Length: 469
Image 1 (cartoon, helix red, strand yellow):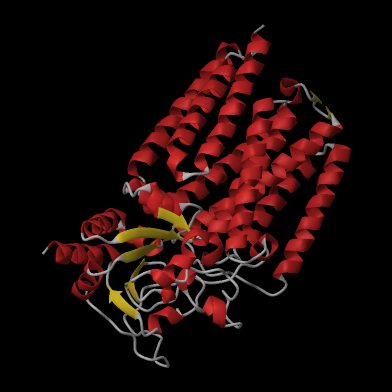
Image 2 (image 1 turned 45 degrees about the vertical axis):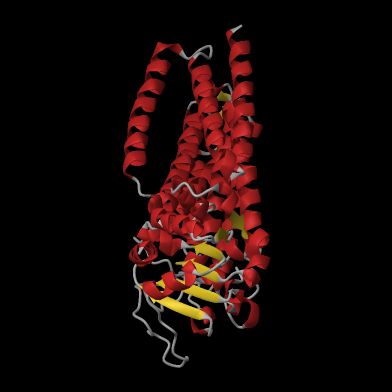
């Protein structure tokens, strides 16, 4: 009876997880999606605690782990800045990967506890599942650690490349496959740990050549890896919910990665085997690195306020610069003032704006920007031609016309937001430094572009002050 109730609870939790993914697919239902996910996880934990054979000792250990992890999670949630969400997500992925490694080790050294055989005599199918969960988990862990370091500025965001890198990765991948086959055939502890060590190294080597421009895809792919690692371990320990949840996370992460790569006109293989771009580095002053280009037109917040006050249609294009300056609240305040002047306000979001999938959507939602004003690239690109003003706040590569005109550019072929088609473009930026792809933005030099140099939040606040006069 208890086993039946536990299985039924797992089924309910699985349905709630599916509903959570469905809710998270749209900003308007994202809060409801999160709620479904939390309720589903609560049911899953309760069902696990009530499973036959848990025993008092097992329940105490699980509750202790929940208390420790819950406390750490609560403290992080209270202190984390919205700009730090990408690196936090990468860190969480690393924990999922390491958890898969630990569970694989527990199953290998205590197979009786999982019903998969005995020490030295584990079922072949279980060894296959175990080795896959171990390998994917270890790759996820080390890859996520590198992604965290790059996103958090503890490591250069520039691609780290060396001669023969792809050949080395291919050779290590082939060796890993051989080790897995040998491990399934022999069940050797030495081969188990060799698989783990090689996978840790492979995760490191796969992520270091990927530059800042591709980080949103990397975060999404690591999310997918963590799901498949969980699913593999779910098969090993015979946990239906872990299999379903892992498959959901793995599949949704892979689909999201495909969508984002499509948004950059790149293949997933191309991203994972090399990446392009480099970090923008320290912000340069106006004119830095542009001696061979025509001078840009620099304006003041007062100029921008005057033009926008008389505009009928304004499109705001947020980017990572807005996130760094934490300017989303004042941007919404500026939009509210412009609406009172009779302007139509829209927000344009590129699929890879920011440093993780949906980064800009989260920031705008935090500022209570109406969902119906936020549009994806495909929905709004045609509207720039009718816009009086495009207000670009920190979005660099995703607005660069070189993606359409310069075949030698690293971003050539990537769909961009056509902000240059607006009558006037205000580009808020600290200086003239290039974006993550390391490519100068031709938009800066267009005759209809006016640069507003300075901190994104301060510049926008000055515009708000001018609009209030």
